[in-house]
Image (cartoon, rainbow, N blue to C red):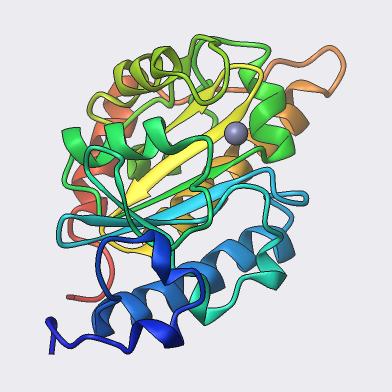
Length: 235
Ligand SMILES: [Zn+2]
């Protein structure tokens, strides 16, 4: 099944890739497009300002640069190898490819979501780390760091991001946005939504005049981390 080849003529722009699209990649692409659209409908992304990727074997399917998600079609499958060489499609991959590839090369991530979500981006301009305002901090591996600013699309930004992601599944990018990864597109999406929600929460709490939000201690977060490891449905 994994090796099943589609007729390349079914795949718009397949001439630019080096091979046909496999059945599992067609499915993963559908899921990727759904996730990308959800970042817009859930208010995490405006226009084409974010990007989404999913790893299938050693191929990374990724949203193309500058194409509105509602116009992405099944035949627009865009894929690169872990070195960034295009193997599927002719549309130009997202300019944030270096960040996505850096995550796949250094973690066990199967999916990555990057957004310019407004509250998260606001927080990225204020602090070097999101204050521990909520116990869901532990669900992202601990206090969420802010990667120092670098120009979008550069290796420098990817490097700053990797440092901020150490032992975490998400981080903020200074004056830029969010990045989160997971074992699936839905997990990477959910982590992004949780991060944006926590940033919104902290901004809301700290905006109350004359009062300072209570923050959780390292010990309190560690205890939650233990609990979360046993949380939810078995996969
Ligand atoms: Zn961006």
